Every structure is written in C-alpha cells, then in structure tokens.
Amino acid sequence: MILITGANGQLGTEIRHLLDERKIEYVGTDVAEMDITSIESVEKKFEEVTPEIVFHVAAYTAVDKAEDEGKELDYQINVVGTQNIAKTAEKYGAKLIYISTDYVFDGTKIGEEYFPEDTCNPQSEYGRTKRLGEEAVLAFSSKSYIVRTSWVFGNFGHNFVFTMQKLAETHPVLTVVNDQTGRPTWTRTLAEFLVHLIENEEKAPFGIYHLSNDNIATWYDFAKEILKDKEVEVKPVTSAEFPQKAKRPEYSVMSLAKAKATGFVIPTWQEALEKMLEQGKK
Image (cartoon, rainbow, N blue to C red; front, side):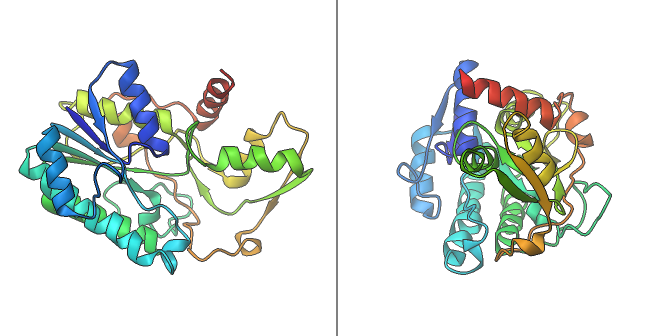
C-alpha cells in the first residue's frame, strides 16, 4: 500500500490521478487525516495503513511568509513533520520518497548545473528547512529517495501558469523577471518519475535525484511561452524591481543525468506546458 502525505496539494493531487489511472492502491492524507507535526498522529495512521511506500509530499511552501510570520510553522511542517514521517517509515520498513527543492542551493553556480552531490547552501528559511528535512530523511530512513524539483506547475492548485493567464486577461503589458534561471517542472512528469523510481529499484538505487523538465528558462522565457497565443506584451525586468522577503536562487539549473540514467524519459518544459494546457481544455 502507498501512503501519500499532502494528497490534496498540487503535486499530491497529480499523484492521486496517476495512481488512479494505473489502478494502484493508495491512501491519501492531508492535515485533517494525519497531522505530520504530531508523532502520535503519524504513528496512528501508519498503524492503520501499514504502508510499504510513502510519498511525503506535504510541505510548507509559503516561501516569503517563512521568513517571518510563518517561520515556526515552516519549521514544524518541513523539519519536525519530515522527521516524524522518516522515523515512522523506518519503523514500518516502508520506502520513503521525499520531495525537496532547488532552494537548497545558493544559486551562485552560474552557467553550470547543480548535481545531487553538490554542497547545499540555502539562502532562505524555506530552503533551510527543506534541507533539514533532507537531512532527517538521510538520518532516519534507510530506504529513501530524495527528489529535488523546481518551478512546479500543473493543472491542480495555484501556480505560475495560471497566475500569468489570469493577469493577461486584465493587463495589456506584463513585466516578468529575466535574471533567475532554472528548469520548470510539470507535476505530471514529476509524479510519473516518482512511480518510476519505486517500480525500477534495480536501475534506481536509493539516494538523491533531481527531476524537472528538460531545457532551461528564465521566468520571462516561461511567461512568454505560456502567453504566446495571447494578446499581451511580456517585458523582461530584473529581480530588483520585484523585491521579495525570501532570496531566490539566481541560477538553479539542476542536472537531470542521474534521473535519465534510470531509464526515465524527460520531456522538455515546452512540451510539458503544451500537454498541460491541452489537458486543461478537456
């Protein structure tokens, strides 16, 4: 049995749809069914489900709020919650798949890809707690995958694609930052990779993987592609013109070589975006 935390979120919903399509049994939980910050709540749910595999997708992702008003909640969910899940998964002998982020890097490796073994140096509270979550998984779970991803978009929940489309309805000109570079990730591609890992263990040993769609982009490039068929002008600007509380990595292109070596085929972000928009019309 598969147990999913954060099952109602953007990625959790995508995973549920994929597992439903493939007729794979799972139990989806969100905070109402299991409070990951409470070890008692986690152990009770594990006792009930006895999972063999855990997709730990639940996370605090309000990146700017994590710098001040959400700092404690960010720590409780991303660190304490992940420790609780990792310890309990180990107790039940379950494989653990933990979703992490490009924010664990400082973004200074300009023009070069980040590899899974590269030194982490988070520059935000969110990045710091996600790295601490990684460390908890490595410390407490002997059968685990850590999958770092970036710039997530999809048909479920709020994300950059929908934000741009909505703004384009009322603004003839949009300004988007052009000095942050990374790889967009379709939730469907990510969900398929997570299932691929657990189904291909001989080709995919436990450890840290990077998964996004192929090709690189700035947010401006991404916005231009999203709105290419709309009557709207997209203008590039610098991050300095959009000050935010949390520091974003300037360059967080993560290497996909290890993921590809497992036999997983990764579409480009442009292909993924096109498929996602097609699905949204159905």
